Image (spheres, rainbow, N blue to C red):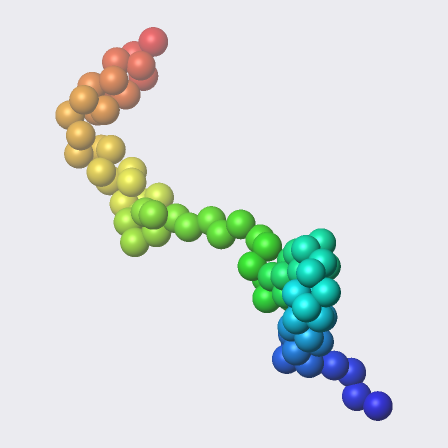
Length: 81
């Protein structure tokens, strides 16, 4: 006997959902739908980094700060204390 794969489980849940629809059982429809979403990983939040293409190395950031006159002045003034 083989273990069911994702496709088998989805088909079983779809059948359960269809039976729930025919029986007019909204709770069973919801449970089957949520179970399908969980199997597909759709129940997890998706976090997207909108600045992913603008990632800089620490070295690049330090070079950028060193070139900035305002940052250099503040750094110099603080180092004199």
